[in-house]
Structures are given as structure tokens and as C-alpha cells.
Length: 136
Image 1 (tube, rainbow, N blue to C red):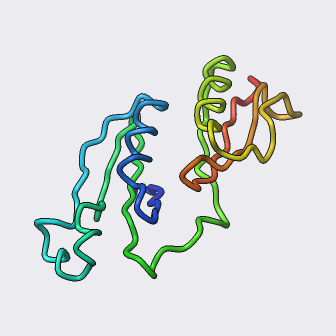
Image 2 (image 1 turned 180 degrees about the vertical axis):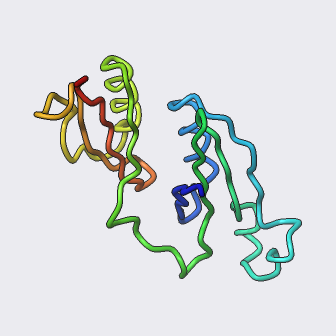
Image 3 (image 1 turned 120 degrees about the vertical axis):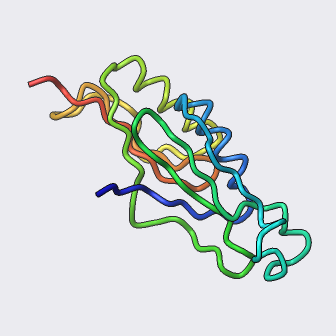
């Protein structure tokens, strides 16, 4: 079994996934717009270039997402995409890159369980936790 986050955006999926690929060192393996699919006629013409499905691989993990058509998008809440990073310097780099133009919910720092831990909502509305656990 595999469990993967699937993020829904209100028109920024392509920009978000390109940003995530750059920050996380991921590879976008699918970026399918509505145009050319059976769903193209179910969205406004201006929306046809928006993404119906995106898939990115980071290491052995998968992140997927799409743009929800107008009137169907909801604010992302009640979850966080959590990144477990072994190197404290890399955790700091990723946290600060994701936080750019976003909102820091908990600045990255040391906790009782982690060398580095921080929480943020990025510029696209995705909630993230960056965790670099202490070795036991």
C-alpha cells in the first residue's frame, strides 16, 4: 500500500509544483492540463490551461495535486505535509525556502524531539511541517 498527499489548488497548481520541485529536488512526472481531456468542456475556457492532475516524485515519495474548478476550491486545512529531513542545515534551507512569501506558524528551531522543527503555510496555501528528529 502507498499513501500520498493530494493537494487541491485554485489555479496555482502548476506554479506550486514547479516551486516544490525546485525546493525539494523533485521530478515532475505528470502535469496534465484540462485541455485535451474529456473534462475540458466541463470547465470555463479560461480554465482549460489549469491542471487536472500533477504528480511529482521526491526520492521514493509521491506528491500529487490539481486545480479545482471555480466554485469547487476549498482552503487547505486540517493537515500538514510533513517533511522528515536528516540534516539540520537542509531542514533550515527547505523551511526558509517554503516560507518565502508564506506564513510561518512556528519558527524552525530545536524542540524536545527534534534538532529542527517548524511549521508554515506556503505562498500557495499548503501547510507544511519540517522535522529533523534528534538521533536516539
